[in-house]
Structure formats: structure tokens, C-alpha cells
Length: 628
View 1: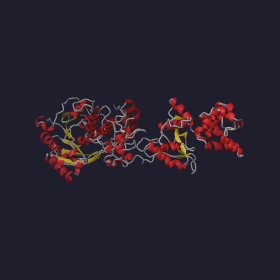
View 2: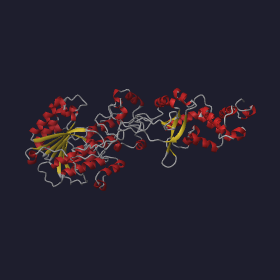
View 3: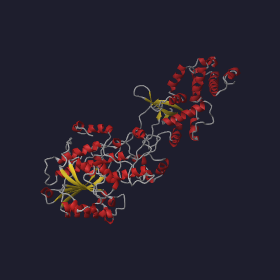
View 4: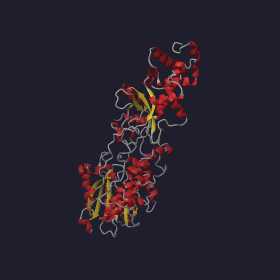
């Protein structure tokens, strides 16, 4: 009765929650007018003292029951649809009740369009003194993007509603789900639900109960971007030899022949067939690799098993010998046992084949750790035995980042027969390889595609594993190591995915509120430069244990891809080998053909949506050609 003006008017309001807000609002206005303040000052005082939701509830209550509104209120801008719209426009207020209706009608409160090309975002408006506390509280509750979320790499932009003013209210953008939850809480509170039907943590509840803290809808602002500009430096190999790379069709099959040892899933064969090569023999001991190999290349010639069991008489004459002999004994990721490991001496099988079949040249691949294993003694032994087989040997470390989206350094060893004229005349010259500037964004699956396929959560870290990751010493700076779209990815290893919770494998950020995920096998294949048409096999095989089919299948794909070679790099190097290979009966410009095949393979390894964009940075002849 005291605030409402009369007990009869009070009784007619029925004392529901809306009426209580209305009575309090009238009381504040009446008290201000009694102190001879202007009507404008009285309304400003009401807005300042009454919670924003309560103010709107009171206004709507009066609008729905005009007979209950005292005469002096009708002269204010407090009631009526038009005056309420004026109030929102003047203050830019976003209210809980309209948001609730938008959600129920399927509107996305985080991306509602307003005007041409503009969007509204939900923000928490609060005084400057609350910003630090509010930011920490919202971050802890997951109501704003974290550093490992898409859009949260560099934090969020806390902006001032009046730029340049130190006392102006600040706005903190919220996640759509968080904004909806807060809106429901404010609505429940406005309707008298004081027992917390919408549960919030005490610190956040205390923050929202302050009369100066409220939600608003404001035009969205650009996300903060403190990322370094994408490198414009030239990452090509031997840029001093740079020349134009144009599209050239592959020579006919059989232009040269090759034998592939330690074949894996066929990375060498994929590259050499793009140059017109014909495989005469392949050797691979792993059953799961042979299954993928046959899936993509057929069973002609049939893949031989253990190279140690292949007789010299069964090895056909060929032009080029290729292979990536086991790298584990030389890798810096392990103990580098070198020749004390059984796999460390398998390179001698390559020596055996070289001495038996005498190909014109060879191309081998291994890890950079080979250079330092046993203080360089392992490499010296390998080179010595290769040279004793009658070949001039050259080697170089080449980084695959020029033609793939990963930084992958590998040692490539090239040998040319000494008894042939060109082999004695000069050492092998490693070729120029152009830089396509590929980054993680070129190979990553679209989030909506993963969700639609139902595989997004299969690759996402569980809350338990992610909690372990956050406490790992190697996670320091972890968000920086994620595969952000503008970054070059880390090297794909055979153990990828085995130590996710220990930060041993690079992860991919997902939109909030999801935890990061691992690369999909297809994304790893793209990182390695395998084309989209290259099949990775299906979930079958005796090597799969019951109850662990899915996880074991993923592990096997990562292992095979991590041990593979990068076909685009092999194509470029093989073209140079053939160009300098003695007595090759061909008029082909093998260097140009190798570069063309390398670029084609790199482009074919991209999803179509990204391939079209990258075609703009290569010669126009590639755009005119059809790349399947």
C-alpha cells in the first residue's frame, strides 16, 4: 500500500510477482517526484535501481492492465509498446523474455541477423569494476570460449559501450547456450522463482543478482586476431633453381620401371606411376599395409612378403629402386639403437638387391635422426656400403611443407651408377620444388560435415582425458600447438593418437563447448599428400581385437600413414633422378614432369572446397586441366 498509492489499488494487483515489480517501480517514481525531481530523473532513477528484467516485467504488466496504471505514470515513457521499444533502443537492452521466445521458435540467439551483413550477439553488460571477476567466473563455468576453442585462441574482446570512457559499461560476449541459460535464470527470477529452478553456481548467481548486471543484444564485433601473419617467406626447395611449373600430362605407363622395397601402403608407387612408371616388384611384410596397398593398386604384381625371403633370381631387371627402409632404429623419438636393432640392418637388403639387379639409380627415404645416430657412424656405414655397390651417393634433408600442410623433414638418399657416363660426371643435383603455401585449414574437415557424418565425437577427447591433458607439463602453451587453420601442422608420426592426454599428438580445435579432437585418418592422409581417391580400407581384418575394433582401426591407419612417404615430394625428386639417370632412353623433360606431377598430387590431396582456392596460386594450366 505504501508504494502502490492505495490499498484498493494494491489489492487489485493480486500481489503476483509481476505486480510486485510494478509496485516497486511506482514507488521509486512516486518517491522521486515527491522530492521534486523531474519526471525524466524519476524514470532514470527507476531504471538504475530496478533490475533490467524487473523493469520490463513492470512495463509489460502496466501495458496489459492499463486500468491499474495511476494517472501520473501515463505521462511517462514507462508504458506502452512504443515507449518500451524506445527504451530498448535507447539502452540497447536485451531482455530475458524475448530471448526465451526466440529460442522456442528456433532462432539462434548468437547469430540473429539485423540489417544487411550485420549480426547480433548476446553480451553480459556490467560496470568496469566487475569485469575481472565476471571474466574469471564466466571462463571457469565455460560460458565464454576457452583458449582451445575455435574463436577463443586469443581470448575474447571485452568492449566498452562508450569507447573512450573509463566509466562506461563493458560488454562480454557469451556463448549462445550460456546466454540462453542466463536468460532463463533471469526470467525465472523475474517471475518469482527464488528457489533456483535454473541452477547456476553461486559466484555466477551472485553476479547476475546485481542490479547493474544484465544481458543485451549488440552488433557483433570482429574476433581479436593477434596471430602472426601467415608466412610469406618462400618455403620452396632450392629456390635458386626456380622455374615455372606448368601442367604436363603423365608419360605413358612403362616409360620406366621400378622396384619398391618396404612398400608400406604404396606412397612411392603412387608418385612414380604419376610419372609413367611401371612397378615390377613390391615387398612389404605388414599384412594391414598389404591390404591397403592391394585395395588401391590391385594385385599385379603380387606383393612379396619379407624382403629377406625374396631370392635375387626373382628380382626383375628395373631402372629405379626405391624404398623407405625402417626408420625406428634411427628416430630421435626413440632410443636410436641403430644397427644393434634387427630392423637397423635391413638396409643391407637394399644393398643386396642393388648388387644383384644393378638398377640405373635408387631413391631412399629415412628420418633426419639417421644423420646423428651413433654420432654419424650409422650414416657413414650406410653410405659406404651403397658406394661399394657401385653408386655415387648424394643426400639431402627436404621439408615437405612446400607441398603439404605439415612440417615433415626427411633424409633422401639418391644413388647413380658410377659405371655410366653421367653418373661419373657430376653429383646428383636436388631439384627445385615450388611452395604452395598449404596450411591446416586446407586439409581439415568442415565441422558441420563431421557432425553430419556422426564422427565428430569419435575423435573428440573425453572430459577425463582432456582433464589429464590440462595438467600435463607438455600442455604449457598447448592452445598454441593446436592445428589452427593458419598454421602448418606438426609431423604426422606412426604413434599419432596414442598419447593424446600427454600432449604427444597435435589436436584440432572445435567450436565451443567441445573439447579438441584428433585428426581423422582422412585428414592425416591429406597431410601426407595422398589424394582423396586413395582408399584407407574398411573396419575388417584378423588384426582387430573383439571389442576394440574402432579404436584399433584408427590406430592402424595412423600407424600406416605416419610410416608412409609423401607422394608429392617423391614425385618431384624422382623426376630429377630420372632426368639425371644415365642412359634413360627418353626425350622427356623429367624435371618439369616431376614438378607437374608433384603439384597435381598435392592438389588432389585437398578436399574440393579448398582445391579450387589453391588453384588460384598455381599456373593457369592446372586450372584448365581436370584433377580427379
